[in-house]
Length: 529
Image (cartoon, rainbow, N blue to C red; front, side):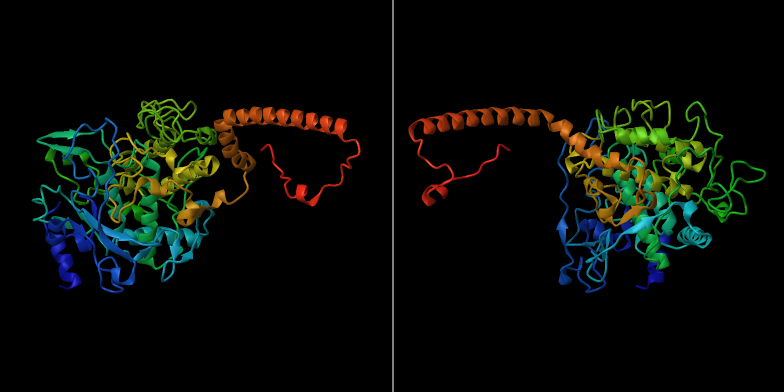
């Protein structure tokens, strides 16, 4: 079947939810519950003939979950992606992708053996041509159909358990808008009932790793459609900003001259249409977003509820957040206190780290401040400021990782809200990624931040902090070892002195600097350490 014919069929299929490889969006794959597409390089599933990978059963985490979601078997995202597929490609070495046809993040080359390190830069440090190229890439993504992925626009049961596939084409930019919606949407319980206290990308430990993968995939898809392998998402450093300095026609779109809720017609973002913003409508219809256009981007920066978010975040608030030593704490949701994740996400006060859901700090403050499309969780990625914002949030996460150097075990293995345990697969990504796989330095994933490569005033403190923290944790053992060592030293010293005294009293003719060879070979040196 030609690509055109396949595209036509996908468009006319009834609307239906996960981001699905096009090669697996069919009745056969769904009924077999298998997504192991062939790699074009050798035509074998998962590139098995070229030792790139093989089709294997998915191993799901059995670790217990927190109490926030009291249901089981009512949501397609539970134990992702097993409702749709229980066999996928498991790639070897540095290979990655739904068919093992790509390289892991941080690697390139024919055999994925070449290390690479790209740099994400401050958008205001880009040259005019670099900035214009970035904006053009976003616009190209908005107008280019995804070659690799389609979206499902209904539940598995609405697909008649796979026998009635319901998929639809989508452009590259909106693919990521839809994924963000799908991960954070409410659970449909039937009738008009929904469960709102569920989110696979927010309000729990996976918030930062999930968005890290999200941006990496976004970068990669833009690299593919542009052929620019060195493309990286820029960031907006919003610390201490007095207003939305990127909200100009030169950058992300200025304010409309007559309607403050719209973008200036001089910005091509003003012609963009949003998707997945009508959550209450979907809930009432027990339906999912099918990526139908729902109007222009809305934005009215600074005209938000000042009692909730009085201003943009400050440098001092970011520094306080970075000083927190616990990644996660307590219930591991938006009520967590002294949690770096919850404070950076914005549900805890950025000056005390105490949960306060009536206020919005740091990450959340930016979304609320924009007072439009960015302010609604499910559809927030419609506004292109989203990528600039989350790139900077990710850089703060990176600073915390470098400062505290946590072991993987710091990320919770159990009892986190559904989907957020360390070994849970992230919704709705295929290929599969576990939360814990991205709880590590960005350099290991092939990227860095421009401002983190430069010496900072607190760089020496950043260097010492992890070692001081480790010393604090083991100080009792160090003191104990010192006491035991002192006792052993005192005993040995007493024995040596007594022995020497005895020798002096019985053999005054002994020459102390002469040792028989046999005795010399029996001497050993020991340290108290």
